[in-house]
Each structure stands twice: as structure tokens, then as C-alpha cells.
Amino acid sequence: MEHRVLITSDGPTLAGIVRTPNGMSAGEKRPAFLVLHGFGSNKDAGNVTAPCELLDRLGYITLRFDMRGCGESEGEPGRLICLEQVADTRSALRFLAGRAEVEADRIAVLGSSFGAAVAVYTAGIEPRVAAVVSSGGWGNGERKFQGQHNTPEAYAKFLAMLEEGRRHRERTGQSLMVPRYDIVPIPGHLRDHLAKRSVQMFPAETAQSMFDFKAEEVIGRIAPRPVLLLHSSSDSVTPTEQSIAMFKRAGQPTELHLLADTDHFMFAEDNVRVRAIVRDWLERFFPTNPASARKARTA
Image (cartoon, rainbow, N blue to C red; front, side, top):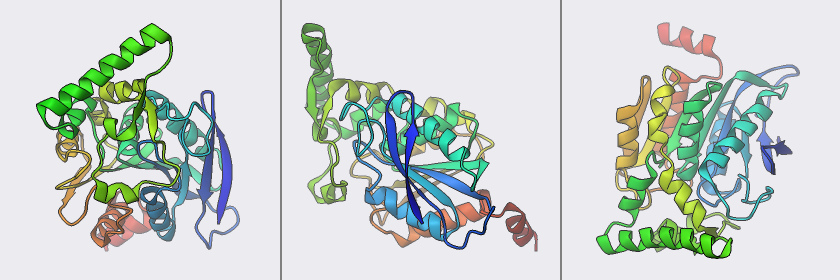
């Protein structure tokens, strides 16, 4: 039960897929999830389709979509500016809330990596987001990059790239294009998890926007809406301290789970414990049928 859709954002049109669970009756409404892809990825990534399948089995409607400049969406290829991705997410939220089968006041956001940072920030400034699940996310771009380029030499090279990007635009009026692994290093053994058609070159402005992006500054505004933070205890891509720092700044109810038996692409790795944690958390904090869930907890 998947339907291709087009979403009007603040400029570019976004390509998405709405998935509805089997067995929905005529006129029935269900809670829903926006599922956000990672850095330069797209809606067909394993870290997107796997949680959509899990949420579908649990009875939720899902919308996965390509951010502007990614996949099948409009926009300058590779030009990913964090606040523009937040705007795209808010546009997708409005779109999903307008569908007849969706409970408009019960739409949550789940994101992985870059998408997780966007999910947290969006919920921090958008009260219509009902709940948040962040997988391998980050809250402070500057600290994140220090952890990813984790020697003095590597970090100095990264900062020099940002500076050269600014100078190049001043000199030429054009963007300096940068390879994705110069922005976000990913070990070779994890690169097979990247979605087909992932963006490989980005303007330096993308890296600068990530450097300046601080979802941790707004996570405290999400409470009392629930937040679930998932992170590998030895993440090979995004430093684990990023989710720990967000947990310290968050209000309640917020849960943080650090897992030793998975890595950065935990949904794509089909980890049984991750699925169990998400399922149990949803039953408690964002059930498909709140009345039945309350009755079960008090029985």
C-alpha cells in the first residue's frame, strides 16, 4: 500500500512515498511518522525503508521523502543546507497532516544521522511534531566535526576547507565542490550501507551549514512530547557523545539507549534489539491506540 506523492516545499517540489498499513477500514485514521534520510542520501536508503517497514507492521502510516537536492526531488544537487532541510520537513508535516487517513495531531518524526539532527531541530521549533526518534544523530555540528576529524592535523585540514570554500565563493561567485568523505568520513566497511544514488559531491556551504547547526539548543523545547535517542556505544561515524549531550539538555520524557552490538547504520543492520526498543517505546509513549495502551498499562 505505497503511493508516490509530490510535496510542495518552500521552493522545490519534493518526491515522497506514503505507506499505509494493510487492513485499514474506510474512514479510519491512524497516527503517522515522517522518516528522514541521512546526509546526501534518499528515501530508498536502508536506514529509511527498514524503519518504515517496522512502523508499517506496528500500524503506523509513514511518509518517506527526498530532501531538496537529493534523490528525485527538485533543488540544486548536493546543496544541503540544514535549515532548508528543516523547512522541507515542516512542509512534509503539513502535507501529511492534510491527508484524510492521518491523525493530524499525532505525527511523529524519525531520522537517522543527518536526518536525526533535522528531526530533533524540527520538533524543537515545530509544536505539531508529536514525538521524535533519533538514531545516530547529532546536536552540535562543530563538536561533531571535531570528533569525526579526530586528530589536530585532520581537523585543521577540515577547517581550512571551510575557509577555502568561503574564499572561493568570494573570488568566483561559485561554490567550491567537496567530496562527501572530506566532510563526513565513513570507514570503508560501512560504505556499502550508503543508498544507491547518494550524493558524492557537495558545495562547501553544506559543510558550513552543518558546522553551524545546533539541534541541542532546541531539544529542551520538545518536552513534554516524548523523545527516543538511539546511538551505537562505539559509533564509527557520529561520535556517541552527541546523543549523550542532547540527552542532558532534553526535558522529560526522554530516553537514551546506547547499544554495543550495532554501528552507525543500526536500522539498516536489521538489529533485533533496536527494533524491540523502538516497539516497546512506541507502546508506552506513542501507541497507535492510546486508549487501549492506557487500559493495558493499568490492568
